[in-house]
Length: 208
Length: 208
DNA sequence: GTGACGATGTATCGAGCCGATACATCGGAG
DNA sequence: CTCCGATGTATCGGCTCGATACATCGTCAC
Image (cartoon, rainbow over all chains, first blue to last red; front, side, top):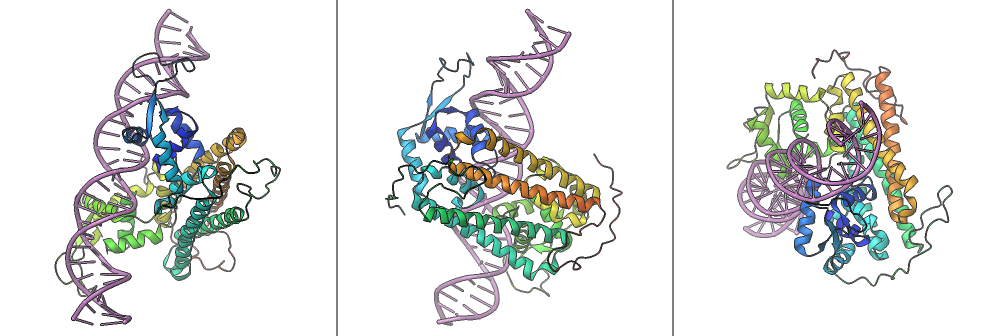
């Protein structure tokens, strides 16, 4: 998952670790908490070993600090890495639908074909609906067995689930109706979004 | 964290692993996903080693299945375990305020003194407010740098944060105003909650 | 100037936790 | 009788986190 996030960010521009982490923290929003260095650096090592990323000597003409010893390491994605990322974009396993996985996939939706976007949104909706049903079950059947605080926690959770399902419904409707990243008109910024990128109409490489 | 959850549940009744997991899954709600056995059993082992829980031979008079070989193991909390749990209830570190930690602590709020409850609720609120400010920052300053999907993810995250802060505000107000687990009147179940348990007015054992 | 400090930056370690897997028993459906 | 799904205990590899260490850079006070 982190693998996909890193590859996706490096596709936009070469970066060093510190930068990568900051970008990760802001872009991946709430679903995915800030990544730790204890995760980031080993992953970078792994990706380099797999040949998906490579080190680009820090361009000292542009960013000259760090003169000696252990200079900053700038990573850039390789051709194999781009290919692998393209695969990851269309694949969806169970981990695609948990909070972290969904956050990463969603972040790269503008580079994902419409069919895959729909598949992922619907998978996520299904996941949340299951969680919601579980909570309703508890609230309906075992409410008397639970103390007031536990009950309140369940209610709050149920609320969040219902809200997310509605959000997903809206996104799905939008996807189906053609206008791609066009979300409902929010106060003031109706026309601000790009009308539509070329958008290959999802020829989608058949893959199990 | 899982340690606290297990101790808390075993305080209610002795249980075996499978039961524990089910109880954990329903009670801890959404904040804490279902625990895996690969986590549960090693933790039980650790707790046993620490002397906080012990094995109680499965009472075959009541639950007779599993006749031979590797019978089911029923765990029960020890005196030391109860003491340790009481400590955990009043302590609050940084991990108390992330999703999982807060969920566990909140679940045991009916066994927590009011002062600690307030401390934890306020800590959680602070944590979420920070997350919210971060998102507002991004949305305000870097909105043009982000594509429509990423933007929508941030908005949804911000929405969830604002909602949770409001929820916490309400809980905090309730705590301060005395009526302990009495939440706002919800459609239909106004009088359904216990008026108030004995509730020691938080003499709170002074502890760093 | 210089010394302290905070931001930037790379990296490792121990421990917690997960998903997959293996194995075994029990109750019931076909 | 046999298969199957629920119950039940347990381990393993691998991902991830928080803590920690170390080094450089810019800047502000003194």
